[in-house]
Length: 247
Ligand code: SAM
Image 1 (spheres, helix red, strand yellow):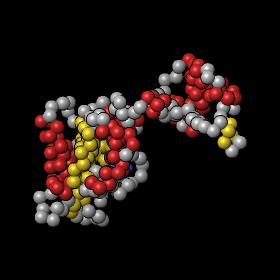
Image 2 (cartoon, helix red, strand yellow):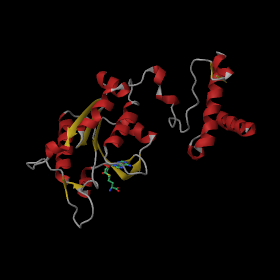
Image 3 (spheres, protein in one colour):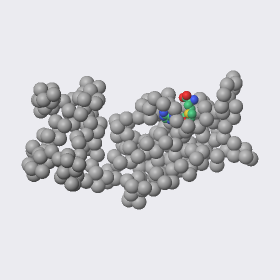
Image 4 (cartoon, protein in one colour):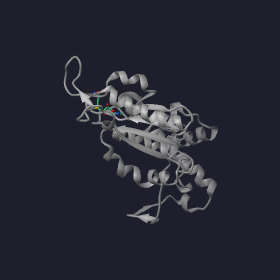
């Protein structure tokens, strides 16, 4: 998968993209991330990328032309290489909230372009180039760089081969619509707190059922809204009944 990120702060990406799973995915050739400085696409002598808002009001607005030129540059390079149509993602608090489902959808794409806004936002006319408007939550950040990193991280870890077996995404929260089960590691007793006996039993079926029940229990307690949307198996319904009886 290839991702082009358009930003006026390229330096923000170098650490996060080179560490851990994202770094490894790039080393393995599963993921290519290119960072473009939007200022390189400004036609002004002083590499200006923002201007005062029409109609007045506070702050500055990112100009359409440098962002359009950077987007078209990324799209043209990709088109020359062939492949499926690209998605152009605008980071904005006004977008659809990013989710695991969206990460799965992005992970099935060959190419993403992510635009990081700043100041009061981006000239609205850039929308004509955008396929997706995505928010990372109902709060306002200074720029689109952190949202872009969140999207790249959540997407890249779903690419085949990005995670080792021991890090499999399939038991993670939201993968199957509910929260993950609790995890424990050595020592067996820590500050007087013991690891649940079943995890030491070596009985894989008992462990599977216990984990599923715990995942359902936490979901019911912390994110009951998720249970309205998920398709439960007969076993899940039975386990949930037990959870409610236990409490
Ligand atoms: N005036 C804009 C508004 O109220 O919707 C906020 C602009 S914000 C200060 C600057 C940029 O940060 C946005 O253009 C966007 O790229 C990014 N941004 C801020 N919060 C975001 C969020 N929750 N999700 C995605 N991007 C965000």
